[in-house]
Length: 212
Length: 212
Image 1: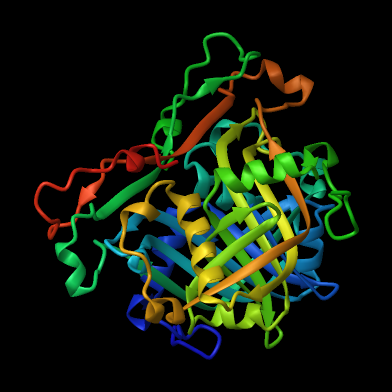
Image 2: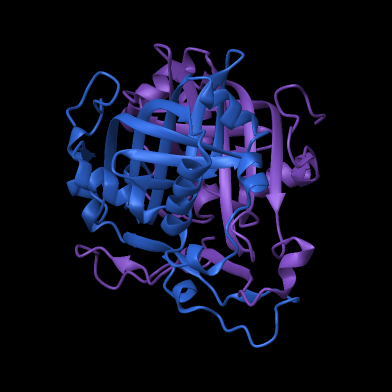
């Protein structure tokens, strides 16, 4: 994708990327999006899970969800995904920074109506979060599908922004006796906590341990 | 704060909270916000670091930052903060969920102009991210302060949303031989990576290891 007025990065353009491989890579590595839209003159930002297929994101929730009802009315939306990789600690306060990967995507959502298409999209979301889980669980009933709203957000334009590597200090500051470097952070999975009402002898599935 | 039309949760109101203790607790436990605003008819959501003091959030960035320039023009903004605590794996696809803590805050930002007030706010942001760091580093020069935009976002209204605990399945599904439970996730700090140009014998400060 070419940068447009909406997506062109004003600052630090060397941190920006517009190619699908980079953008899709970040979208696939994350699972939480922050979706922005305007309602009654007020911008609203709501966190939500998603799945990706080609250049489309699927969002879902209760059919009664305000966010989904606003979005399906066809208002312009912004879907932003951010992965924090580390705190960048420079010798000066000014040059502190963050290592991260983010995508800002613009588009308009449409409601998915057919039960079959809906279930397909839900499967994409489920597989995005935890590949293998869908096959293991009880699939949605017709009633559950009806109670679930599923939206397709076709990405019209998007930009990625990435910062990696060590701090960049002013030349004069390198001699200061201040510790500088990167404190990496990673979202880690801990030991699964089995539900207290688990049917006897149900092992932890392998796909859970390689979830992300 | 009392729920208003903007903040009243339509769905699952039992997951909602409007008290300052809960809201400030979530804001203090996180460090990344997603800020939403409308510009040229397009909602935009940008990730940013922040600091909190009483009912105010401080945001900062380059004086050339588009987000900060739009926000300081006095447009309504939404600041959303989300901490993911785990994936909730139910026996049915339908009852899958996420354990999380989030805050959606509405308000209008104002630019902080005075150098002294600006430096104070930057210190609040720095201490929020890593208490102890500010004292250790070279403070900002007058020129650096000039190149930095700092905004104060006074929270007018906010709501918190929290989900904790195990999956809640349909009664009939509890007998299914499907593993169910919670896969907890935590943002963890890894070993600090020292900058290659570190002045000799500069130890890793203690505050880095108890950063978050």
